[in-house]
Length: 77
Image (cartoon, rainbow, N blue to C red):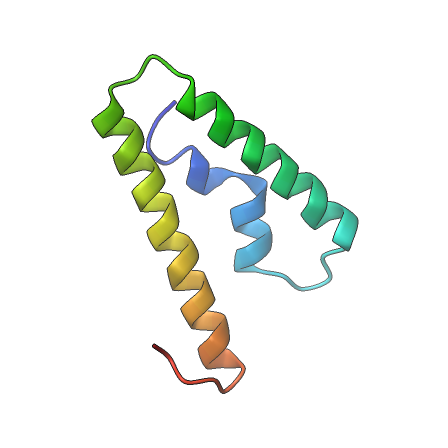
């Protein structure tokens, strides 16, 4: 699994463009994402590579959160 595989997950694309997303779609995508995280954590990859992959995903999620807070008129932290 490469570093960008988690960022290509359906959950990230749904969060990036949440127009007309159903709860069922979001729940399924979240379940798939969590399963992918489990797979990564059990993989034989070097721990530093796993850490970079997870940190990169966290940064992307924080950026999406900040973007949507700004879009809704909230203050960015």
